[in-house]
Every structure is written in structure tokens, then in C-alpha cells.
Image (tube, rainbow, N blue to C red; front, side):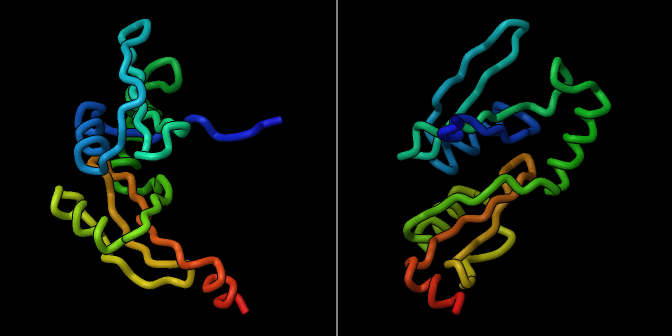
Length: 146
């Protein structure tokens, strides 16, 4: 039986730049940074407080998993911001939004009230977009569904 997700991948244009963005701007911890056979860099980061979920910052480079044509297509899609990578939660969205903006994170929308909570959208330095969200209390969400 499958019990949990342990790793997910986010495709990035440049691993060094992604390292800087995820560690120095978003404040993630580096879990693994190792060079494997053939020079492949296995780079994973984790949100603080969630060390059991490793996010592999995967380069959009050709290799055993994709040919040059696929690599070029993926690089184009990531760069254009056509790939959404997920939702990052925070307990205080306004504070987190201000902290990230001060570090140079570019938001496409400020914190905005939604039925599920408050959400702001941003992109990483490769072009992947994320939702930064502060959840509503469960009772408030349930009341909104009635």
C-alpha cells in the first residue's frame, strides 16, 4: 500500500539559480546536493518543518529521461510560466508576502480573499508558478459551501 509522497520534481532552467531562489528567497532547507554517476546533480530541498517531502530541482536538460526535443519543449513551457507547481501554505500570508517581496520574489497577484482562504500568486526564477495560501478555518470553509 502506498503511504505517502516522499519526493516531487520541479523542472528548473538552472539548478544553481534555483538553489539560490528556493534556499535564499523561499527559505527552504537543502536536503540533498550530490553528484551522481555521469555528473548528474541530485538536488532536493524541503520546506522548513516538512523534511519528509523532498522537492527535486530537476534541470530541463536532455539525458536518460528525455531527448533534446523534449528538453527544448519543457524548457519553453517552464520559461513561459505554463506549469503550475503547487500550493505553498503559510500561517500569515501578509507577513510572508512582504518578506518574499523584499527578497525579490515577483508576485503576479497580491494576497486576495478567496472562498478557501487568502491567496497570492508568484513565479520562481525559472517560470513555475505557485499559489501562496493561508487557509481559512475549517468551520469557515464549511460555512462557505452551504
